[in-house]
Length: 520
Image 1 (cartoon, rainbow, N blue to C red):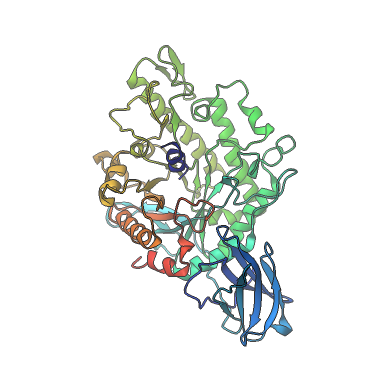
Image 2: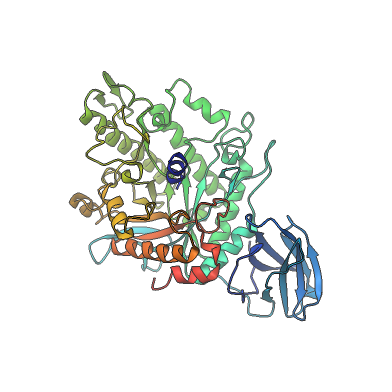
């Protein structure tokens, strides 16, 4: 998704005792839920950041009698057991006194008992000759169905951010819990999240720049909390190491001292690859140390959100001479064939190192990679062979599905967005996948052993002006993914309303969740 945003700018172990009865989630608050606690019921909701006129939240009983109220930004209310009654209503009141339709919650229905994760996800050859995911316990095929769960602050990822010396925390465990419950109810099974920390505003996994060594422990505690809640609700998690390479703190930046600038060094130099491998290992080792079974919650470890090389950074700025990459091979930078081999063979070596390291931690853990397509940045396999240094426009070069298909990766994650109103959706989808070689005969052979998923797809508001139009588009894309066929899909996003240029699943709440997963 970050590729498209850049391009566009440039041109609980708790049991629920309620279910929603209101059909729409639109308004000041959403994800309204209630959790059973030892001393009563904890009511929780999330504020819609687009709505700024909410003055208070009222908690009422079934007869409309006011029990209590809170003011933003407070997002919870503890209802004592003795006051609980049979049902409650949650009402958002605006500054001018207007009340929303009530969210009605029952406290007497049978407790919501989620089915916890049982069985890991692996890859095998399916009955139709194509690779498929399957549950190792039930032996049943597994199709990825879910969402990207992303939250932003000051324009960058903050999903798991914990407090640092200069920033406040942004992770809300009850938001995550309510999201998991909702997805489970409608039959979804996976969420994709960003493991990231690359900015001063959101230090994330990097923590405090000068004092954090390795990974920021409070951030990791939030990730672990998220995995526990996912497991309890039967949801697998696909963590992707977000664009930005390494955590933004001194201990990680020191690992790259002496290297040319630019993230190409992470993929093509021994020192850079060693640093990235250490990052991935520390992340997995921390989870395993906490609870080895939590590794079974991971659908996969994704090496990068949207992998690409940059033609304006080392080594592709060189147009003569020899470059020796981390794989020990030398490449003539005056030769387009050699430059392309440097990319292809260099990335294969990079992925081999990561896969080898991950399998040492957990032999059963899948490893994947995410990419946007060449066509999305105005490129093709033929006309931009060799990552030419004089490339005009966007300098980013993603690898093709063919390149990744020949690597030791377990599966590939492609991303698709419809960005031109005058181009038919089905045509755009096919052309985009074709630009990375998905329909190449060689790729069709690779697909016998390696699944491909649609890890991101979404709807831009400048293409689809209304959510009604977006709904139809999103369902159609899901159908195109099935027809390709791909082995699953995850919409961008569940509820990242901070990203105002796109439509999100919770625009109409459970109503759309039900539509998107129909016939799955």
